[in-house]
Image (cartoon, rainbow, N blue to C red; front, side, top):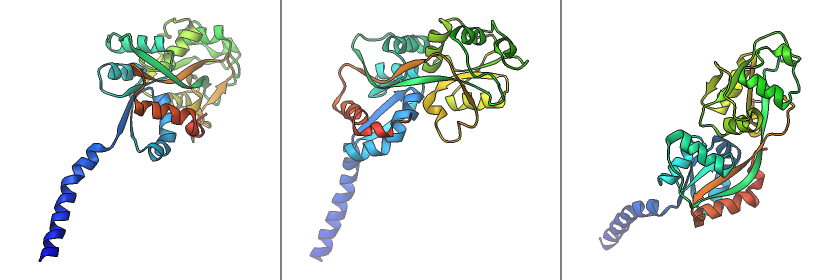
Length: 259
């Protein structure tokens, strides 16, 4: 009888402690750039959690929205795929949120943006001036740059996308996109849309091109190099949890980062 009561007591104690165990689990939430999410965080997520005991929660909602979430306390750090000043500008453009003075950027790796066209397009090389003219609508037919006789269809990410903003800044001198440019919600859809239209042209992170199944859908065009930092942004100094993340991906976790 005593043994039975003892086992009942232990079972009850275990039930009471379950919520405390769940509550004590460390969680690190990162919101923002889908490029950082797909190229860095997701490939190394399992290894990071195993190495640190910290559960990594990722929300890919774009650099601007991730920055807003950071400022408003909805995440521990923001994922960004552009320079700090541009990330702040993305946040203001997306929500009107003002940036506090204590934001700090922590670069993990640099990323290359590649220009893509449909595999059937014969164009293999474009200059900055040609890219600008194609993207703004000044050049409306591919034959003007040595391609086939067909109209140009510009495909780009949504207005809050850091990839779009970097390309627009470096290759288009911040000029507006061509009227009628197709805006898509994700990089995956940008690749699929360029694959769908023989006339299409877009610009995406090299890391997305290297993901399984994407290389055959598009053709990469030779252009001047378009690079940007992939980083984590914190409000103030990095917390111990965020610092563990940075140390991991700058150290043993480098091998998980997708090229």
